[in-house]
Length: 219
Image (cartoon, rainbow, N blue to C red):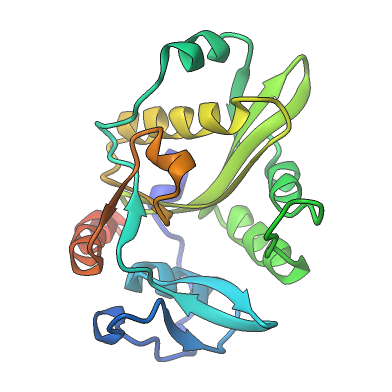
């Protein structure tokens, strides 16, 4: 995921995105704007990510925020055994991973065609990346997200084979550590992610870590 650490030149963001430090207890900081590459990059730098609510584009900043400490991943004995049957690749099938995450049969699905197109554009710019997990030549699971400097925002993951999404997270941690990244954002600390070592940190703490992590994006 190294190529995504330096953001290519983009036009200025057309929107004045609010500072999430002033959002109080609300997870939704703003509603509106668009999914253009410049908007998305500016939002991630600010500490925001997009999801729709009742069809409208909303910009979220949970408090607390879920992160996976890059030195704190927990791989159970069974997961270590399971990993041996998988092959892991990076950016081999970004579209396939996004399609797996966007499967309308998944509960609580939120990834519509506009998101598929928007993150496809980011992938073409070298800003969004996928980690694929394969089993017997078939895509078994994976995740995708956005890389800016030393920061990686995991957007969504899926699995079709048991443990495939866990292996995707594990591989992402290893890739980010090897590349000198500092922050792996997973939005919310779900029970599934907590079992892998994810923790919840206060919004202000997260935003401080984010500012430090994205500092190398234009280097």
